[in-house]
Length: 99
Length: 410
Image 1: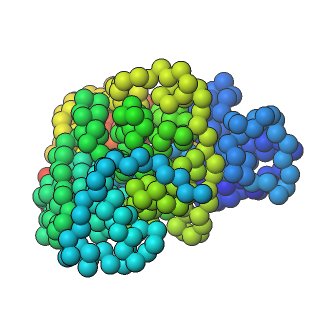
Image 2: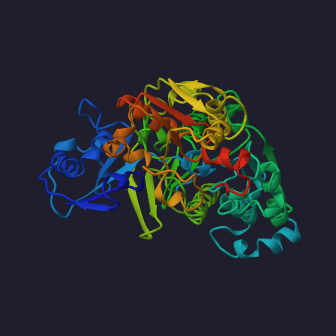
Image 3: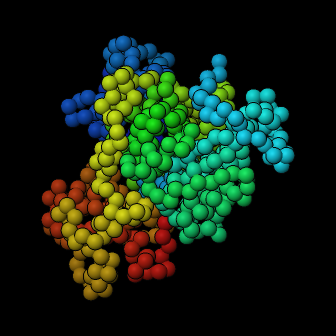
């Protein structure tokens, strides 16, 4: 299935905006993502292995936190996962962006 | 079905003069706006937090559309580097307060507009007082502290809708938060990312027209909320990718456990947002970056890393002293301005540390653009057993200011 990688995290996927991975559930797909791109791991998961609270993951257009089976939800090749990070830019990008 | 999210605030709507009727003709002949809608716009008071990349197009279109009162919150002054995207300012207003510069442009566009200038940093101490006079808040700020502050203040002001927009490089987000029925920013992001974990510095920058796209979406949402027409972006997050020119939307839900808008809120007054976001308080009123850099430049040692001045670096170079200078910026920054040092971007430093292992016991001086990334890099080298690492305070910018005035600043 396809995983959409947001701009701030593309530095860890070799600039790829989407990554295709295998996995029968959301957890498996995310696991293959971080296996293929290990630098992403610390940005998505806490050292204890939980998804970080400021990282939102959507299966198609639904927040996986609100799916009945959450990360254990079954997925097919046609599904898409999207990672939505917090971004704050807007007023004066020199402060946030180009330090 | 259209959702009217703003209760009619005025029993008697203000009248339009014949000149105003002529000006707003293209609105008046739209049945969805009409005479009453245009009067609602005139009665409306909208607060734009920030007059930068998002605030510029946002407030310009609101002014053009006939919003009666626009409040502007900004403490900054116009800088030449703003003009690549902040089209409310102009070459002739560089150096002026942004709120003054913006007022010139807005009143030039629409003299019927009432501009209220708040030349201040939005803080927990003043936010509720400023917000109370407005019907809709449009968040065009640039940092997580103010994002959470604006969100919480909107909820705590009795659910004032927050027309939200945010941008990063080629990507943008827009939504309407903090309405009674919809989710707030904290429902989506209960906590901010710790500083440093979300890449921002090295990968910074923004395509100048992207804030135009997103700011105009915010303006559209503001107008719809005031008129009570269409489907507002409540409970939806619109994602814009300017490179692929893709627009996607995701469902947002109101989180019953949300600490500010949930059923049992734990945040019932404004808090210390610098602390919440793990960020040191800015020492003075000024751009965050300036106050942060100033703090780094003043202290001789920060987190165990000696800070050396550009004058000291110049002296060492001229004296032919033996030290290793390393540039930790991104490759595309080198052609803009450089000190002739070898380059390893800060994000690659840990992986590529072997390349500079021979300097472990040498004097190593790190530099970047402003001294901020190189400070982080210095901590990384220290962790990896480098014994004599210092940071060039102020970076290339300080070098251009104090040593080589021919060097461009970016």
